[in-house]
Image 1 (cartoon, rainbow, N blue to C red):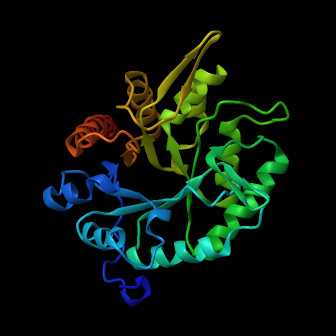
Image 2: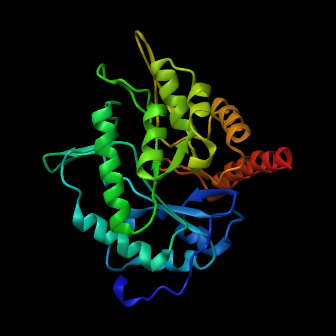
Image 3: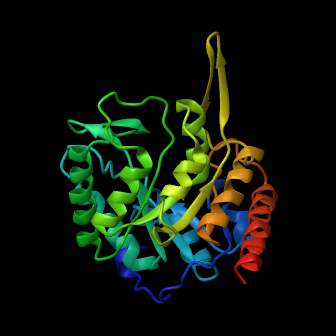
Length: 291
């Protein structure tokens, strides 16, 4: 069935201040059969740009039971290439059909001269780059007729020309473009270890009213002769140090809807649900503190 032929009957549903999980194809059947006790689901938008097939059929079914967030990985907001009008049209159609509570993209670039790279690459944190991102995010929000969230990425190098910190860049982007922030706590930890900054300084610099979603994931440590580097692989449980940083984030920001990301070497669905329950316990403690 073509996506355009299915009118939206779902209505908007807000994301609860609970933990959710990323829905991946390997877990389609288990999610449909067991309806795990998680607060919401998030999917990669581009996986549902097709005109039909199982992905859209499954999303139609799970959307009837869970609030939904759409998370994009391919818009390449930081590129100087023109925004992809076809990509935006497909995203807008997907939003109209499923009415997600949240739509997000990355503070990154991944294409140049029409050629796409298989990674989310960091930007130089300069005023020129900031102006470029403000314009691009504003254009996307105008096309979609809604606010989007921008997620901080993990990085493995820094630009010598950067004149702003990443956290100041992100906060200014949200303020001046009117977008929200998807704060990836794992990415903060990974980048802090790789570049030697204090992750708590990052957390304190992001105003709480800007953050509408948090991501948690696992990383891998690559060791070599001169040291080690952390890689944001999304194929491990959340590291204890990231859980500790997440607790600090909730104390600073208050309880925020939180997603467990796990994209490769996927475990059984029950493992993801267990990670989500651990996040829920921290959120409940945050609620109790706020009360």
